[in-house]
Length: 504
Image 1 (cartoon, rainbow, N blue to C red):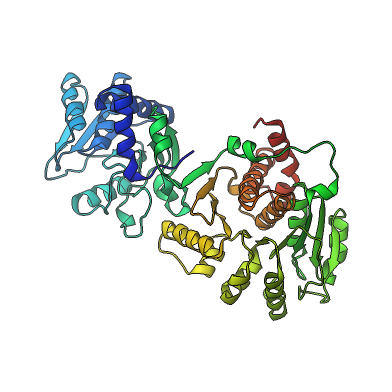
Image 2: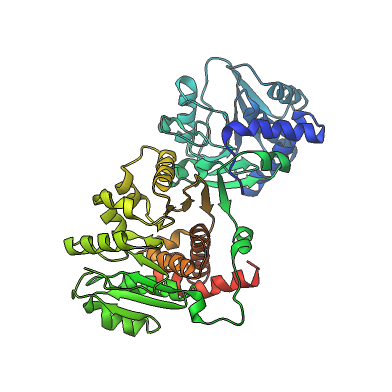
């Protein structure tokens, strides 16, 4: 699904109105019906207070309130008309004369706080996606009042005060905190940033049948990754093949006390179709590797406890390095050696990324189309902390472009950033995957896909999707609380089975 930027939303509305030869108020009523339906489905009780602004977000809220009133709900509208009303908002307000049972309060200058309890419901329709500056003055006070009531809050399209993309200069204390956000047609980019979850709450996308052509023509470099997208690039196995057709993967991982990282990466790789998997570990890790992952070939480092160097390995299709390596001085030199001498794309994760952050001079040696898989803190070590996640995304794009690499930026919603400035948002996964070793499994999955001949972009997209799907299957059977990284690895075959069958 394409992510639409805030500056394109009005144009899509306009094209929809032109294509269908309808009035703008007709489109607004279509949205209001969907909003009212969503509110009814999530309503838990209490009086309903609608805080409406002067624009079309306020019009949506009032129109939905009328529909709720018809369903027997106790509706109280507080309409802020400090600014000039939009044409649609004026028309919807005029309808209220036919519904004397709705309590309507117009605020021109002074806002008198209504009595709202924690048992009530607030519909936030103050400001929508068009806002481009922080709330201040009276509206900031209203947002703070809403947040102080303890009532359940449903926001229409986007919480008032929150900007759709970049909130670097926003005043976050003046943003409405919603329990549910009912967004129109397509989710906003900001919904995928974990930093703003406390404002958005849960969100639901309401399809109001905006012009498909207009959305397709809209230029956007960000989209979500869905099952159908992965099906299109997944290749089923040919009957007449052998292990050599599925590549040879080398994973450099583990140190004394961190054998688990190497084991998880190896299992992720083996359970994702690599023809042959080698794991380079310190000698202290050999016995546990051969016991727990007998399918993998164990390559032994000269050092007992850490990775120091890679002896000749000319037959591997792809090399991954980083999980559980540590950052000993000898390991740093070994990682540098691997990067400097690599002739094909690498998968770089965990401590290898931390080593890169402290040794930026070796960035220039990273082979083109390599894949870096940092979580947010690791990425910030590479580029410096970011005041806003939107800024972090721009940094990721600049880094990917400068060194012609792919970046898998891991978070609650993982972003896959390409050298060409294209962003994909993975849609699988759950909070149960926030557990040690989960990223090691992902490294193994992506490495296996590269070994099988998938492009770097394909490997990153399929790998993150399948890794998340395996986590979802594990959580469904075992619970989010009780699942581990090994469970994710063990559910990879079930995830691949769904992709092979073509049915989710």
